[in-house]
Length: 123
Image: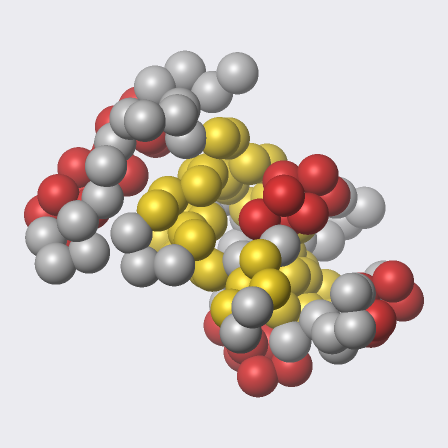
């Protein structure tokens, strides 16, 4: 069964969504390690910016025989000054610009946005 996850690509004045997309990863600090360790290949991740912007939707994938990891990518231990050793391999697909607005107070609307993004062909 597919599990759906959401992850923000930053906070506290930093925003790494472009890096998530460039490297095909979702990465996080040690406190979020437990969440990322639960992600399985085939699970769906929703990459968001703030509370109301969907940046991309992706599927967790295996690379080199694993889907998630911790501490084995040294460059994540000092990523723009942040220690972000937990990661998940993701095949990201960008949300089309100006489509699928998201109202964080409308859960049904959020789910319909996710469904639209998952059903459209992923190029």
